Length: 127
Image (cartoon, rainbow, N blue to C red; front, side, top):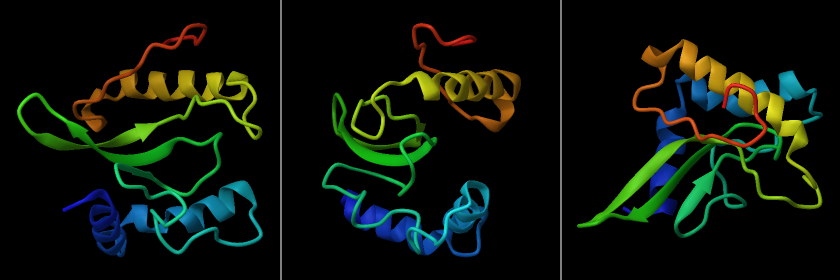
């Protein structure tokens, strides 16, 4: 199964689960005029080797990807903040408090974050 097929399968499986309501939640929390997508992953954010949910650059992103392991390829999955600078994100400064809050949550609730890894980011409190 490739990443595009996996993203489609996750979209189908998300129905009936909280994560399947992510775009509706984003509309309410961010006061969006309309739902940006009907699914978690869509064609704008699904690529050959990775996919992330359609969302704002300032948000925590759900992501999946394929990686080459030492002996065989594997699928990675998780959440992350994109620190790649762009026109819409010329500095990571707006993300730093969110990253610190997320890192604190992970440290405070390890039982809810199986096998989680918190990346250290210079200048982020509690990183």
